[in-house]
Length: 310
Image (cartoon, rainbow, N blue to C red):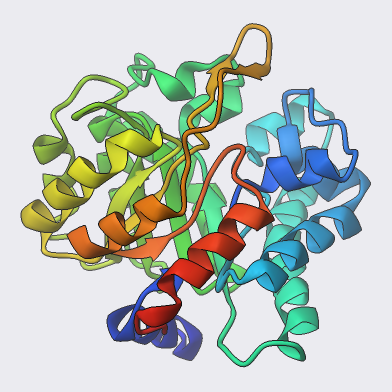
């Protein structure tokens, strides 16, 4: 059975456009935190959880309706490499949801809109921390990937987020595994691919990739994230046409990530003016991913201010 909050989130999405947050790592780095190791922002769940709450709060105050948790790179395997037990890892996964919920509680006194929590579920490649999340094709089958994802999803769902964010998925085969893994958890999900042009990072046409989720009852929205802003508009049209579901979009700034150097290069091409085009094409959840901070989210919220907001 779905929780009342999850049902309400689906209702908010049906009623209007929902503003997502921006890059959590971007905000944490701006606050002076070092994210240069394999756990990325998940390291702060262990060392400085209050910093995660503050980062979420900055996005709520900027106009975001949704905080996406610090669990993208949080896995049993990744924490295990740091010597943490499975019990401790499960506690940290649950904590990620609690920190976002605490930020929503703190922000609630200053805003007059519902605030939501999306539990981030990154791809298998994020656990590897070797850049393969931008390639897919790990050499694993759907069954193996489902076995990897299911335990973490169970823990996150038990923490009662409003939605599960199956995000930065590079490969339609991994999407199949994720959709199998979310069945029966009682929490709705969105599925968003990382794309390049009209294909997933693994090279599948977007028509094929989005079709995977067309009949998935657990999935309330499909779309793209962690991609170049110029790849969004066409992807929105395909996602809406193929699935008939609301579309979620949260691209990067347009800069390029060098996995070997663990650094960004190039310039930002993210502009709030693009948001109207995305909404017009069918996007209902709109925000930013890597290198998109609170100022950009504030501009998104202002741009969408004339549209119905859930």
